[in-house]
Length: 390
Ligand code: GLN
Image (cartoon, rainbow, N blue to C red; front, side):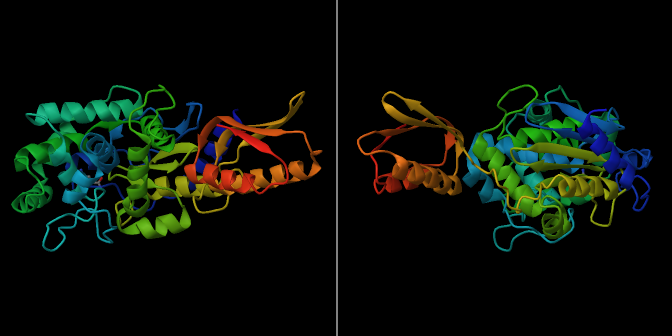
């Protein structure tokens, strides 16, 4: 067995006995799910989807749609336009809380229901069908497969969605929602009722992990900045009133939904997703969270722990008749510039006077502007003449 799949199976086996919590029942159709379903999927940089458990079972995406609809409106209308209508502060309140900022009527963030209804209200289109089509297109591009709406879950949500409608009316009274309330709300209910598998969610997560490029299809779905903005908001707000403790213990931007899905993102490394319908009191999947937490721990994915290789370029030194050539490739981050300088210093000291060193930075896939500036400033102080090619 593939060693990563074996590791994943081990993680799933370790959490499978926990039957605490219960599936959401306030949307009647969600209560009909088999509560024992359990699935886990991971996608790395080469776009290989690995999954274990009930990985072919479809369930509705629910709140996990929120970061992707946010990406949609950020891409089209920009951060400032979005922030006029919704804040970016963790709410510390349940996902369906009726609470808006005093004075402005802005919801706290786009990951709770009020904020998501505000962002869904920004999706352009003449009617519910056109707005839903735009959302489906975006989510399908993130997933790398054509997604569709589960009509019976949609009807169930719409029939029982008065609390969300109340939020919509309140926000329209403040001018946060421009669209007619029924258009914004029915679009929101349809967006929550889009069917996905755990494999779809892992691909969607990985598209955010790799700066907006879907690693399976190779398609750029969002800009690097939009992916970064979405991940920032997921980090502080993605797990509702458990977001702070989640960041502390697991250390990954994540998003959960009431049907039992959860996805998490290790930037530049992995997108992961889990599915298990029993929820805790915050509305987050009990075993889904345990899977992601265990995986983060075993693979050292916590964002805030130190990593030796962050932004470390590959340094290749060759001797040519014209002198020494030092080629940098990969990525040059700020901290790594220090280490490149240390190598250059040693070389400069050991270089006989009269011979030259050239530093070729043209093959760097990515360099952070401040890193290159720091490097240039220091080059002048070295005891040998170094030519920088950039
Ligand atoms: N459709 C659900 C609702 O609006 C989504 C909530 C969630 O997944 N937390 O209540």
